[in-house]
Figure 1 (tube, rainbow, N blue to C red):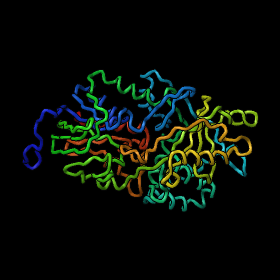
Figure 2 (tube, rainbow, N blue to C red):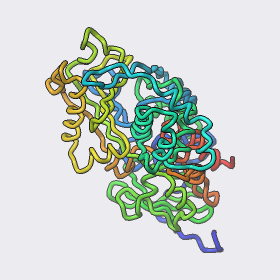
Figure 3 (cartoon, helix red, strand yellow):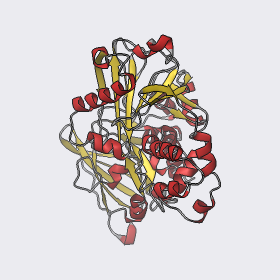
Figure 4 (tube, rainbow, N blue to C red):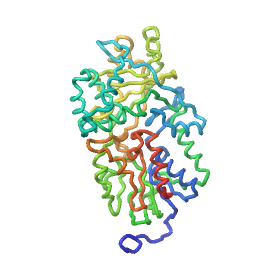
Length: 449
């Protein structure tokens, strides 16, 4: 024990002991548990929710021919680990690339490509090589290279794609991401939804089966070197579990929450070594509402002009981005806002009000062509900001936090190991692929490298 102290736990009839406890059954926790079980370790996998997947949440609805993805939806870049698991599950990957249309002078118009110019301005930038700065400050310095419209598109991209506050986000981190593989030419979806990936992770546990306990939020982790006791509640009754090591695979914002917050995990002693890393990362807010219509009306407008469109943009609208299920045809549009805009539009309003706001934004796009409200049949929504076991969508790096992901993922005393997309160091932060990488990396660390 640390400093020669006596063991801090005692065996009771409610105790469960194992080789490794994994806290959180999202993509990272499942990946860690599967790898550890394959290596023959006895694993206890604890999940606060009544389901697996964390910020992956796939639903099926009658009359909708595609999965309803309340959380993660796309595969960005090569994402080899994600594609491999989907292949193991027998689930094909569908290329989602398609045309972009934006509202200009009252009409949806094909969007002129500006992405290559933005990437070129970022690649090898001497100012960023010298020192980090906020993305807003960086865009100001690019005034002589990028047009005002291109800079605004870059700002909108950072807010929408990275869910970032551009006044706080690290320009260096965004540049590394945007010029890397994540935003390459390939954007895809799992044909059968991300639940197929979860099935593959569960099936991968053939080397041994982790004991899984759902509806079991962990309230406290008491630890000393090679001695961990977790405590929480299951079916209204307290539980404890002990092991020499634990993998902590909860979202960034849960780790950042004060111990008294609902869904938070208290560490005793505290994980002070993570304080700087936690302060250099943020969890971005998003609004994602899936609007269900009587038909895919946009496919028939203007003699099929928008049939192959993947993304519609309404600059200046409260909810500015919509995407289709292309290449599949389905009566579903996803309404999306990220970053400060998402926080503002969702503040103090009900899901019904958010759906109404999405409809108003969509009406701006197709106002003179169709009565949007008359087409609407319903909507699907989950508030990830208010979800106590998520408290946000996904992570981004703040100014000066270039090493924050690595520091957050570093083990403590060969006892506590950390996984989750916020700890990814392979350029996949904020993605399912990043979560999977981190889970496998944490499992390797538990097993001794």
